Image (cartoon, rainbow over all chains, first blue to last red; front, side, top):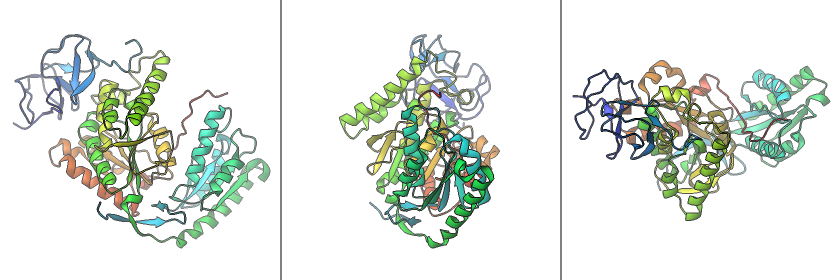
Amino acid sequence: MLPNVLRLHPDDSVVTAIRDLAEGEQLCADGLLPKVSVRQPIAFGHKVAIRAIACGEHVIKYGASIGVAVADIAPGEHVHTQNLASVRGDASR
Amino acid sequence: MSNTTFDGYLRPDGSVGVRNIVAVIPSCGCAQHVARMIAAAVPGAAVVDYSGGCGETAADLNVATHLLAQMGRHPNVIASLVVSLGCEGLDARDLSARIAEGWAPTELLVIQEMGGTRKTIDRGVEIVRGFVENVADYQRTSCPASSLTVGLECGGSDATSGLAANPSLGVMADLLVAEGGRAILPETSELLGAEHILMDRAATPDLASQIERVVKACERELKATGEDMTGKQPSPGNIRGGITTVEEKALGDVLKGGSTPVVDVLTYGQPPRQPGLSFMDTPGNDLASVTGLAAAGCQVIVFTTGRGNPMGNAIAPVLKVTGNPATYARMSEDMDVNAGEVVEGKATVTEMGERIWELVLATASGQETAAERTGHQEFMMLRKGPLY
């Protein structure tokens, strides 16, 4: 199976789709990934959780925090503005 | 250190140009039309399209005068004409005098003294034609890569910027620095959340605290607006492209600086003081940032763009690198490098970085960029204060 996502750092809790993914597709990347199927269609360039992320937990990409989860996120779920918020860019935080 | 060279123009002051441009510089927005008409009438002339110059704070006018003077003294510029209205806040005579301190000839025309639009345009065209005729005096000679200053810009980002284009540009930056050249990493607002990476690479503890100070000041300014930065940083296009937060954008953005130590922290438009990678405090706004890079003396700027930004600059050629294969296919006339091959597994980041470096050298030797072919000459001066 050809890789359909990229994991940029071993600590990352999300991966990035390198093509459009259909609901139910299994994630595949160079290096080990847990068995995860996507829960909804994911557009090229968008992020998918590869493990459960609790509300309030930092989301990790490039091995660093890209913000905090504002909802519980299940493995295979699209991670974007609906469930991830910036800490640095929001005046209310 | 190896001996990589390119064919540039060795200037009398020892600097090296990669283009022979006659710059037409309006000293205020009211002189913009006349300056544009003059530049448009003469092939080889370009307008440094400044729109401020009046009703601004003294601090902003100082920065503008300083940067416009640097544009006039840029190594890619062989002569310049300053076009003044006559009653603007910016001191055009001071600007003209500062440009005249350099080696290249410069003239000043004042619209109110010339007797209006047409008379100024006619005289301006005459002057600029005379300057352009001197182009034949300049011949390219072999110049060391260490004489290059290259700006590392990114704009219209999407998720591929951090996956492909920026890491490839980082490889290019490392190659340039290994040759003894100067690389400038701009865009403070796009470092929020990734400043620790640059601070860890700061050449001295003092530089690390300078980086922190500059980034914190930017964050304070942004938060003082009371606005959530979402929707601005990242921009709506960034968000559609898969970037969710400013931290995520920053972590992808900082990769374009490569892996060498940060040797200096520069103010907006300040020329680098030493070889290596310098960080410049600029806005994330692409036009204002590229203007700062050009004013600092970058002979070439490399601009990574996932969504596809076609912009260029009047003085410094701007190379476009996209990490998104679809953007390359859709906007190929505006793109110079398809780093999307990295995403598709057809090339490695190292190979792509080497390809960008070869293209930087070819561009410095005279090869046209996509933005030059399509006539892009954008310009925007940073303004911090209010307009009165």
